[in-house]
Image (tube, rainbow, N blue to C red; front, side, top):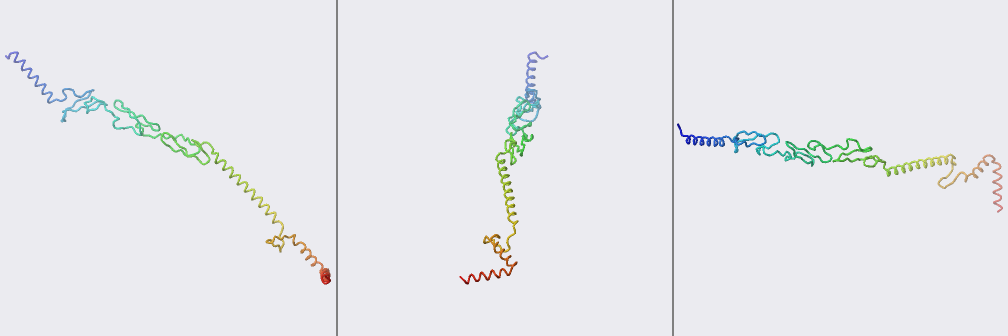
Length: 223
């Protein structure tokens, strides 16, 4: 029978070897994976690998949370807010969506009454028709109203002047011109009226014209 001291000494040596073997051949013995992570032996330098629950970083042995904002998932200048096992994006004005990737269409409500709507970032711009002004093209342009009024007045005045001129021209042509009228010299029918009367007298009474001619000749001889 082995003495007690020898048995105790042998048990201590066995226990020491067991612990040494566990530490040498089982890297997961010390429970390195935290926060509910599971340890798996592998051939890496550490000798193990951690499988973490969602939200924890396996490279840190599941000790730290994963920061999903490190990959900059939020777009268009949005702010990323890290939360456990995820993130949220605070979108700037004019954008929405999970990653603020959607540009809000401010023209969807058709704000331009008399014009074309141009969608911009967090606002819109109206390209108004000729006769309208204002942010929403809902006001008449006084400048164009004045211009149109003056143009219409000019057109009406021109039409009246043309009608009056045409009427005057028509009245002037109602009297037939004299056959031998010389318009370039400014002669008129009234100027030739005595000659016309004399010619008509000669044609109607030739003998009387002969006596008048003889009397005219004698009077010239006496002088």
